[in-house]
Image (cartoon, rainbow over the protein chains, first blue to last red):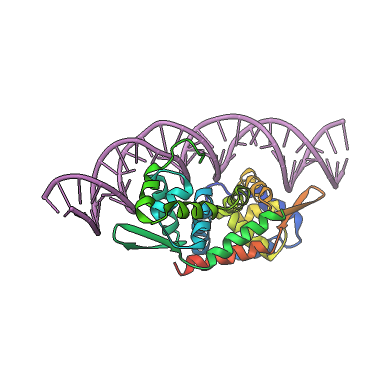
Length: 127
Length: 127
DNA sequence: GAGACATATCGTACCTTTGCGTTTTGTATT
DNA sequence: AATACAAAACGCAAAGGTACGATATGTCTC
């Protein structure tokens, strides 16, 4: 993951054999690397989405805002488990919450979340 | 995760207090649950996307098809590590590969993958 | 202010994923 | 057929994520 730890020298020599101008190809490949920030942000989003229970929560919130205890019914899981999932979804910016009395109501933060869910289903569908 | 293990009876009684007709609400919540297959498929896709190295590979493949040894340069990681990531991407249906001589060339399987990457960046952006 | 109750947080045992050295497989080249 | 080499598969230690009981926090009702 860093630069000096275990450089794949073998890979370099592979490129040496593969191209007339390996330096240029290497430079091109390196340039195509996206900024670290972007990648880290994307990873955080996908990590939050990479769990069945959390996906079920999002699909439910698609229909309507829900409070925590309703989501317990949906997931059929204990309160602390549900709360942990909701915290993750919130931290990743996928849902927002508002407090009303002793209830916390959760809702999808951005319509882009719907699109992510739909695309994942589509990709999977014709795999 | 299953039905009989640890039912959140507490949640049921919460709904009892919350609604005039809790049974109806419970039924509605349960009906909103998507088919198990769908959720499992979505999870698989998001799991495959939930890793910085794999995201970097996908961003690189956005530009052009690449062989394994090129991706080693991009990730700056040993061959076995890169191969593991590629296997996962392939199993999730995100990339396809073709073999030419002793090289394997990888490419994005579906333009939906680009959209997923873009959406994740967008969601993250205004979080 | 005491009790009930929805949530949030903490601690931790358990399970999954990752990274990577090593070995194996498949394809050129000599 | 021996060598070279890209890629795939195997194996296991280390890291990370999950589930959930227990506990803490905040809010309503009496």
